[in-house]
Length: 395
Image (cartoon, rainbow, N blue to C red; front, top):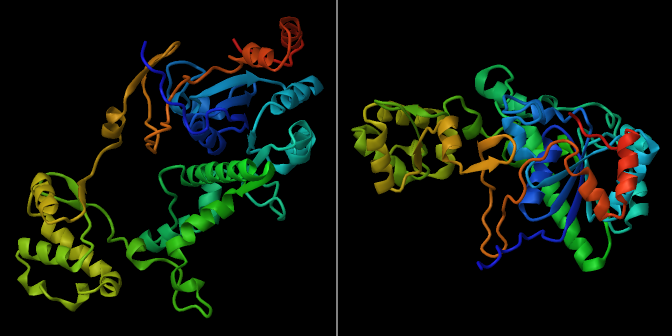
């Protein structure tokens, strides 16, 4: 008999997931990949991510096949008092509660930190929403597009391209999802040391502001300011992949030696020793000029020729890889209902507690009976809840 696979780092941790769309489900997907037992509460009408793009089944999009993995699913009517009772009984068995409901709905449903703490005094309660709960916008709706516009992301693209443009990815949702993960992990570590649970709040606007201002605060963070916001080397429109004779590449010379090698290879001996690239600050101040020179040089050889050259000279470089190629590079898995799909690899590797995909994405209500029997309900009680519309199993 083969030895069992090592458990993930969060093996033994149970997470109650009352989230929707992407930000929260992405966070709980990562917690599940790390070994946690994630129980998702979903409405019978299904979450938005189940219809984000094409899919092999009306309840399963390509997005949800990966986003909902490593989770068990209970479809529960929380507006019904017995539904809330079920939720609190599940919460009493959980270490972590994650939600992206706004303060108003949480209050109306009776799912605030104080409510959950009554069920489980040491619970780690993570509440994520668009804006801080102590501000005037606490109950304003917010999606990725709104947060990109509210946190400087759209303004950074305006500086590059002349008008505000949103990043072609759900940037704010995913940054906020990662922030939820590290917030939960830090709170679990605190509980391990002290026995104390706590409430963790992740306002999307603050998570993304923190992310954006790391470099784009620039001289504006100083008092008095020593320059405008925006890291100049990053926001220049000249910072983009370069054409070669047969395709696209991105070469990023980062040192004097890199520029020396490129200018020599390109026959630009007139630029050797130019003051505009001799030290780091000069390269930042003259980034537009340097990007232009590199682009002109790269146009005269093939992508493969430049990759060989850059590797030999220790210059960072890659060909431009398509989304389709990245998808093809992922491993294949077989969902028991919808068939074969590409399973997106987790983003970190552990030598002793590897991440893993132990459960395929569930359908709404797939684990109603399993979870409720675990927490003490009888089969007859589950049947009654099902008949009364508290538990829901969609067709």
